[in-house]
Image (cartoon, rainbow, N blue to C red; front, side, top):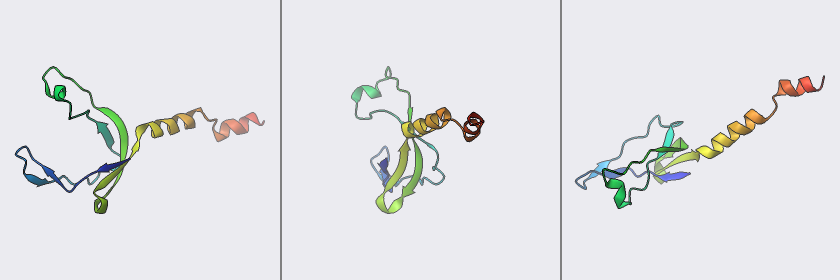
Length: 95
């Protein structure tokens, strides 16, 4: 996934501020915090739990972007590895 990550952001008074530097974020979680455009999301009764949607990989400043991999791909790869016979199990089967 390619995520827009501009150098500047806006504060609560709509002033331009420098965004944080994502140094050390590689390997960290990409969390889905929900849809901020939904009006009901700002009511006190609304509750939303962040969900893990990916793993951060790297930043490309020249493109104002961050790169992440979807967590489903990681989970599927781990699952495939766990269900595949290991090399030692295959050699035992040949005996």
